[in-house]
Image 1: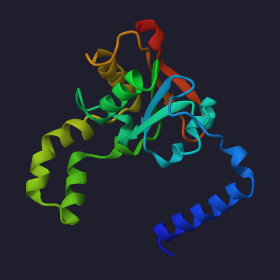
Image 2 (image 1 turned 120 degrees about the vertical axis):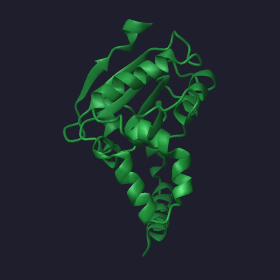
Image 3 (image 1 turned 60 degrees about the horizontal axis):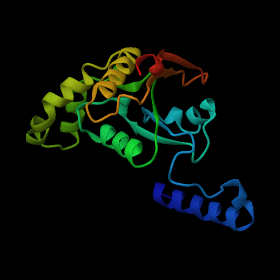
Length: 189
């Protein structure tokens, strides 16, 4: 069975579980986050079903935005766009940038990624289009704590983000579940 078939089989079992009366385990939620919180974090698989419970966050309580290394690369890239919608359309009043120890991106280089892309048939011309941004992004991500501080600063100083929104920075231990505050956003509002 391939991955798609596995997912569809799991969904079928899940739907049967709901039909059998477990729907109360998944109550209907509004699209607005109950806690008025946006969490911006990494896409690391170790955070799935671990970060939110470690924070006491349940379904419907927060908007969760993820990308590789919880990085912001420009003033109107996807993360900033998601935060703008979250704040102005969905009622988010606070943002938490959450990095984690042992991030895979900290051990990646633009050169190694480019070599893997070339080996998989990506055109050198396509790589040339993004090479400078790739180098600027990946080769400057070596320390998750520094990245958290930089991302918090980029979001807080973005002219599209209201100054009354606290932007917190935290680091998560994907082995123990412990959170540590790096930037207390209340001190900058």
